Length: 151
Length: 60
Image 1: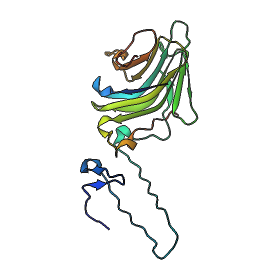
Image 2 (image 1 turned 90 degrees about the vertical axis):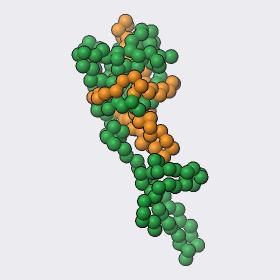
Image 3 (image 1 turned 90 degrees about the horizontal axis):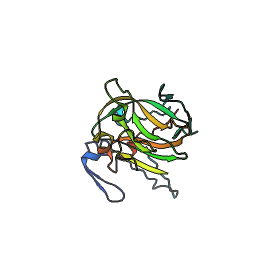
Image 4 (image 1 turned 60 degrees about the vertical axis):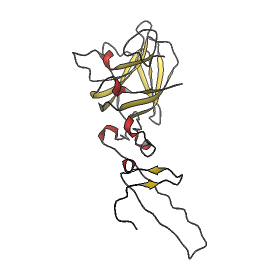
């Protein structure tokens, strides 16, 4: 069994992994040469990074963004992966987030009604900043927030 | 269904306490949209070995 640090590795598909990609390496050997049976070994590895990306497996609480903006409703799918916002709703998922210069948010979006503004935004707007500064509009007839992703 | 990858950090940085999902329609109050499969991650971790670290963003 190797005991020293592993500085590189090759995946079963032949990809060479440098030290940058390896925080942990695990060596496993298994055989049963005295048996005709073949055993499968399954290794499950869970990755965790720092707090910014830590998974909250209990889900994020959804609350209304308050007057004068939120008048609508919201509904969460059974598996917690989807949030539907309707009828002039502004809904917040309570999640502390640090946005760095490298941060990306990805998601799927589907609108089933016409509206003025469909958007995703980051909260904690202080009085000196407009919420539009932290808002990406992705649909709707009214122009509000950043427009780079409003297709 | 549309998919978005928004490089938020190119537009602003900072501390926030919520992510807001907006379906605004003051005129007649009728709107409906679904946001799903949300991942928040550091672009620098999009390497093959790092892909699973994305935040599996679930709603309560």
